Length: 257
Image 1 (cartoon, rainbow, N blue to C red):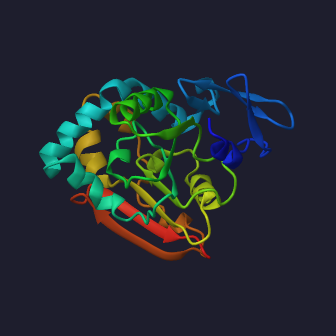
Image 2 (cartoon, rainbow, N blue to C red):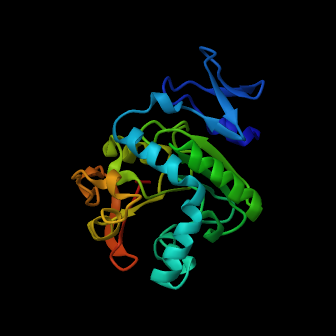
């Protein structure tokens, strides 16, 4: 792991600085260690995860091997191409040359090929299964990115570390949406536009609840509206719109300068 990445890491539980030793990430204060598996830094173990996060961790670990392929077929059928689908929300990102860009809930890293080149890419997800698939894809696509297993509610990064922070898919069912939003704000630099994208009721009710492999994970009633009310009042340029034929929402706002 490169020195620039080490400099922006912090312990997600105690907030102390981290360093590397013997293929592990080590807390410089209490010597707690976090393992590295297939170049993925693991800031949590699966058995430490509870609630909705645990439910959907199990779901995504299960579907990880065929997630990318199934999505590609769906996007071609529904939108004409995967690029058509992803550009509807990725176009909201304000990415400049050499920016540090992080996707929270990166999944299998399928958004990364559609981002500009010459940037520093980072991805975090709760599912190790999805991250392992992401690593395979990144190697295939010849894209360099740093991957981390962790919870969106407790990000392992220092304040103001990233030029671009975005999330696609997942926040609807997080244990604590408010904590995840505040963490995304915390790790963003001043002036950063933060983008949050997830499924609308139209997609959940019309597809997920009717598809055999997914319906048991969506059998409970949740509030899956965009979490506009959880955006701190001091944020700027708050904007909401539906994209991808009304199947996704795109919520964006700017961290004050």
